[in-house]
Length: 83
Image (cartoon, rainbow, N blue to C red; front, side, top):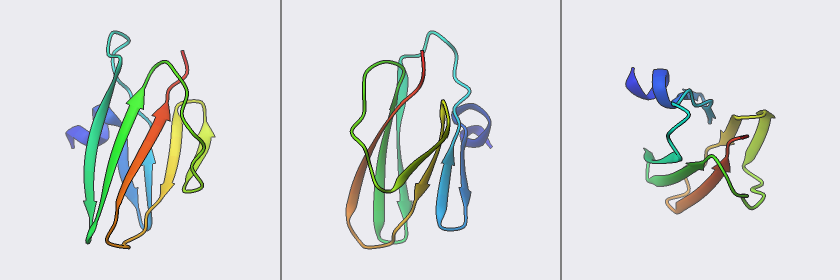
């Protein structure tokens, strides 16, 4: 419940929706999620830029959808929130 309410992380089948509702003074956060044999290390920051990722769809400013794969690999995902 805490992940969903504050960090805005919800699983929707083979996708992970991220829509954070964090306080303005937070610079961001990092979470790790295990999906089967695959680990997702997700970094969310307020400022900066993130490299394009084919598995990430930006739905609106500050709302992202990550396509999940259970390929047994570690995945690093960087997301940037709008100012």
